[in-house]
Image (cartoon, rainbow, N blue to C red; front, side, top):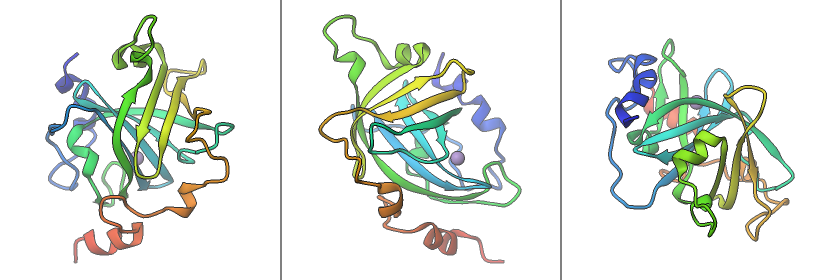
Length: 200
Ligand code: MN
């Protein structure tokens, strides 16, 4: 499937004359794929976890956000692919539009596919996604180390996001509450809401 085909759902849900979200695909300048986690103060606050795979951002909505504690399994609901251009989107999606609310880039950076690095039977990201078993190493500003995303048997949209038990695991950290600001602009959700909401 081409990147273009997988963005149909994204484009159909949005009216680009009303929302500031990107309509274009976007391009990634570097060779290493990226991840991004966007804090999204929609009807219900959640964190959108996105991984660049094949020119699009595979996306999951994580109600509680990621943890640095390997004992915590976080529900991650698979949502529509997003364009790469979404990775640096911060702003306010207007009332009445899909996903209305404020978006902040909570963390981002390159990632590595750990399943591609295994000696026996290396697995591509596309294949890992199809199998429902993703293992990545994140190099973000707030999150580092291995994370797994495993599809549950209770339906194809339900996955679990878990920190791997490696040297970057830390049960005492809680970056969701202690590091709430944007890694791109240093702004809070309130700052973005104040600055980006169109004046009437
Ligand atoms: Mn969202």
